Image (tube, rainbow, N blue to C red; front, top):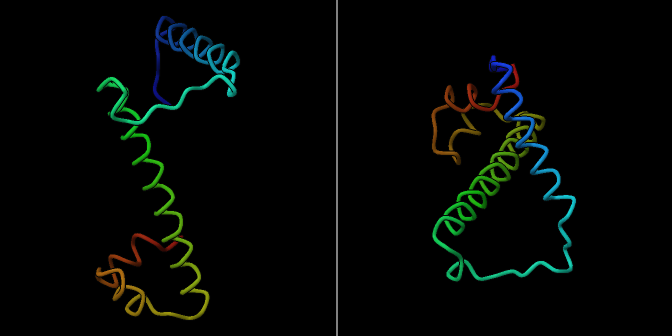
Length: 98
């Protein structure tokens, strides 16, 4: 954890409280979804970046699951590395749990 000064910690806690209040007050029935091209540029960029991050995390989880399944079935790191287009050592370093 990052060492924060008491002032920084108080500022962060205050910001968190404001965000929590905003979420609590949110009424899903009153949300208006807009196409991305109708959003202000800052919101559109933030939305697109968030969506990309979510998709990448999901893809990484699925890839790890597929590698775990292949290893459980006895596949070598060489055999796994071929469809992933990486070296066996790179695959082992990235996906092994050791």
